[in-house]
Amino acid sequence: IAESLPSGDPLIVLAGYALDLQRIVSSDIGFKGRFLLRMELPDPTPFEIARMVATRLGRSGYVLGEGLTARYIADAVASMGEDWRADRNGRVADDLVHSVRVELRKKSASGNDLGTLSPAMSSRMPIAMPDEITVTVEDFQNAFRNGI
Image 1 (spheres, rainbow, N blue to C red):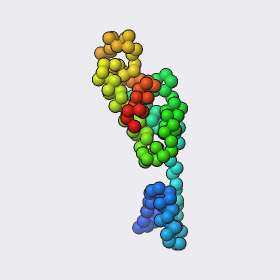
Image 2: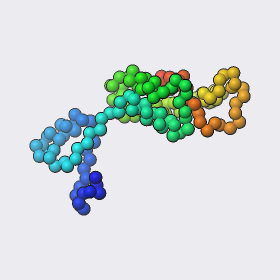
Image 3: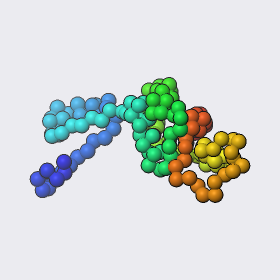
Image 4: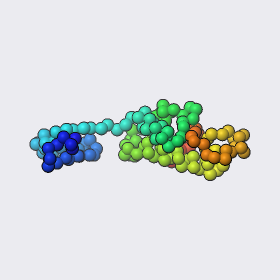
């Protein structure tokens, strides 16, 4: 947008809650007409938040285990309600990823192999850390319950 403006023209970005911005724009009759472009970005849906969580975990080397799907995460996020998401001001995905990482660190410190081995196999821990760390449904539930 800025590149298409003639040299010296200002670029003004108003960001905030829709109702607050509407009040500002409607405060002066000619104010609204001075803006060439108006973009409104809606809050992400629970499924979009879940996809953000899954993508961020995947980029960090985590793999969603059996039963832990984007739909499962979305259902958990949706169960908290719209006000809960609004109170977190767009941080839900970041908070969830952080909580999962904390949960896995706690699990690792307690001697479990980050969800990649069954309890019967925990005595045969690998010497090197695996390239991918599996996040189980239990890991997510604990992170969701304790970290958010």
